[in-house]
Amino acid sequence: MKGGVVVIESRKQAVSIRMNVADVRKVKKLAQRLGVRDSDIIRFAVKSMLARLGPLYDPDMRGRNLVPMFVESGSEMLRFFDLDAPRLHAIINEGVEAGRQVDRDDVALLALSSGQETYAALRLTELDRQDRPAGEPPDLARSLRQYLYDKYVYNRAAAGGANGNGNGESHAAK
Image (cartoon, rainbow, N blue to C red; front, side, top):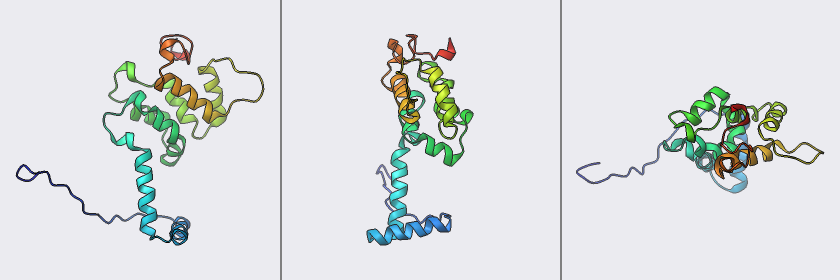
């Protein structure tokens, strides 16, 4: 702010990134096919990533408010950044009052879904005790999304929905 006037910086800044040869080749092929510059492809990728992960750079987005972002892009992001359950728990719940936190078991489930799908499916079955028809096991991504959205976004757990105990706690918390 200069002399009571807000100055908006609109200059662009050059940034150097390291990419492996295969990724650079893919960027060049995309740019060539679309008839744009390589830098346009990279800016698109950065803007797309910022849009997907936007809640993480908003300091007011914590606890259950981060559930949709982690459900939609969590497993990919967790794998890429090698985030484990304790680090994920800190990212989601640090500085959040108890009633707005995501249960530790549910954070662990999110972390497991990024690489240990079979174990995550077993844990989800334990946590989400809804009656399911016999037959093929449910799709993990869809079941996990439904369970977490019901519990934290739609808040059906508080009404006895997602976990059936009526108090919003996970079964493991009983």
